[in-house]
Amino acid sequence: MTTQKKAAVIGWPLTHTLSPVIHNHWMTNHGVEGVYEKIPVAPDALESTVHGLKAEGYVGFNVTVPHKEAIIPYLDKIAPLARLMGAVNTVKIDENGMTTGFNTDGIGLVANLQKSVASWPKDKPALVLGAGGAARAAALGLLNEDLPFVMISNRTRAKAEAVAAEVGRGRMVVSDWDNRHEAASSAGLIVNTTVLGMHGNPPLDVDLSKAGKDTVVYDIVYQPLITPLLEHAAEHGLRTVTGLGMLVYQAAAAFKIWFDVMPEYDEGLKDRLEAVFR
Image (cartoon, rainbow, N blue to C red; front, side):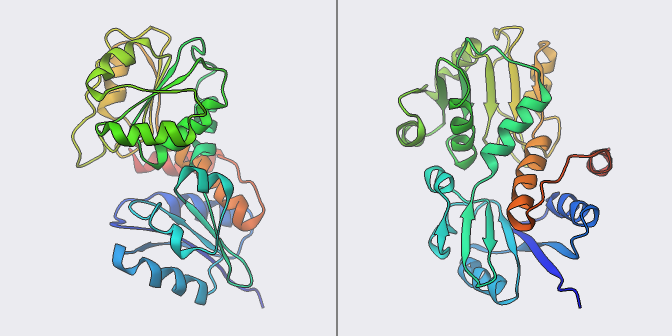
């Protein structure tokens, strides 16, 4: 008798998520018998949900907003990268019920960038907008590239300063939010890690008219797929990267953690995801 393997994504609210489409596609392709579900979890139910998923035999689960930081106290172990980032997006539950928190966002973010554009101007700094877990992921990934430094800008300057101090390795510069237009004009890569531009949120206001023509603009928001920021970038002839690939590549790293198989972003999956946005 084959034991069904169960995995899930938890968040609140959890109305729009493509994770079940992605993971169920890979489970079928790789002969993993089981199901990947979405489970809305209110903040006051987070601890009990972690215990429940362990008791019900889940192999692991993904964590999305607003639980990425809040879940840490309820896990048995935290991988070093997730600890450094202060956020968890993937949890593995072993056969003994022990939980380990990982963060695959940085892997997904950089993989998506590298697979979407052949290169970007690495003689210029990158600009990261935002100061949450995704900003930390972007900063950590980009600091491994051969860039002069990484700029970070956030509406609350103190949060940007905290990211620079904790993960910047002396190579991050905080730029005031009011100076973001000027910072964008000097960056070779601009990465939006805020929720601005997502369905239900106002657009991100960044002037790209003075950006270099070889600048790449990357928005991790994928609902909508083409955000107002990416539309603005395209109007100025700049190369753009959508957030969909980041979602897929961070999911691939999570799948590998649970099932010890590295899945591919194959044509079948691309067709299924693109159908969602038609």
